[in-house]
Image (cartoon, rainbow, N blue to C red):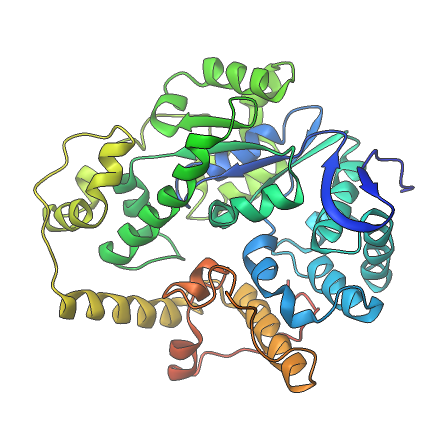
Length: 401
């Protein structure tokens, strides 16, 4: 389709924040907290196009230094092609010419801004045009760790933050085909996410930040969605409540981890931790994240059970082992992980070619963090994938899906 989407204001090609004529919407929150539900709902709005997750900020933004100077057209083309071809759902199921799509995105991004944000905007503009909608939204759960970067790139963005009882979120995590595999790791990751959001939740204006408490949304969805639409400056429509009938919801709903998306909103998932977490797990959760549960208004927190250093080290190691071993199990994420590993290999290849040598100082988050690989989008650490000889054969810039 021709490019007729109103995009940006910028200053003669100089790198600066991109101000979209139609404010972008970022749905954020920890995984298993309802972000996919909100994504599906907003995607039903007649003015907002919300594709499947991208993982662009976690997988690319901290590692832009590995592409070299993006003012170099070849370096920029490499970034644009990796982003264009690297979606978990290839091309968001748009009918595109795969041989030319990367070049088209590169060209459009250069018209907007020769930067990561330019590619990001070009990709979402493409999808919005495809959906014949004037505005776009994005949902990647771990964007919760990259809010400062998003605001630098899109300062007029609006954030929809959905949060949920960390015990329920952890219970679902432990029953999923991805993510942490023991309560200590689940609690750590959940708390880190809420902590990352807290600073922005407290300082951004009511025009830019909207809170949704999962437990309240599922009890009174229409009331919450009306207020959400008012926040976004959009008219409420009953189409939002029909999210479960959309192709995305039906596809997701056919999987074990997202089956509820193919059904109307229900409160049956509130308080599931009481049946799914042992009392010991609940006490460990209280030790790791009880203060954050309390901060968010959750009650009935048991006395904490403190783990010693040896126990936490073992929990961290066993989580890493299980994550790797489960990648190629039924319902595992081996295909997408292969592509993620291809990106890591491409970074190393560029280093060997002399395009980059060391990260900036100070290094951007999450470089150097104990959960760096997880917070940058990988589902398992390379150490344990190597240990178990988990196959990895994704060429950089090529989707395996």
